[in-house]
Image (cartoon, rainbow, N blue to C red; front, top):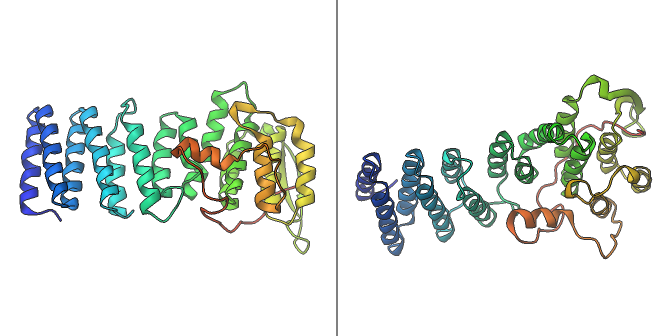
Length: 331
């Protein structure tokens, strides 16, 4: 809770914004924030800057509002503010107010993500924050940016990722649908997120037309299990994605080598994604098959795109128990 003096200042500055004195209010917010920071009254600084950013963004003063929003995140870092529902809610409220075209939104997102990495429980950034950002960008049609965040999000993110890859495939018709879901599945599996890969694949497959399925084959998830029928698709990389998930759920190093050999003609460096490198990451993570020395790391590349730095070791973010298996022996 803010002090009485701070509350009075908040009301005065809010009134200044409402009266159209945007520049003066913006400068006063910064002046008061600096004074409170010197006094180490970080809670008051955060409340002040959040209130100011909200008021200015609502007044369509996105540049000034963005400046205060970034200042708030810098104060989060200075005060070592933990990632809590309250601190995340402030960030989410501001993100909802940002116009998509505001140049300051990306620095705000980057700063918020870096704060959540250092002050939260996840080295990849807070999953709820990734989900919130990715969802906004998905609905704006910014599929490439949204994908980067949904890969590190929640169960909801994984399902939305499947929808995103399908929608993206409709937009980029020169590339087969299977390329999109295969790229997402391999990146999730590089982080050992088998459950999330299943969720993404299921969401994607549910969007496919019946005409894109050409039959079903029997599959035994384990030697003692009964056979189940799983669908097969016209697009070989959709079949490949399903098989890769199944391979991750069993001790199938030999099956993986066979899978890689069989499907290698179906891919290339599509849409800026190196499938061979991703498959090598998969083999290392699940079967300790060493990679060629000249190859990079898909997870590190993704983290570099997001944060400009290296990633933690593969599998270090979250390990989720896999659900029931769903298929093999596909063309």
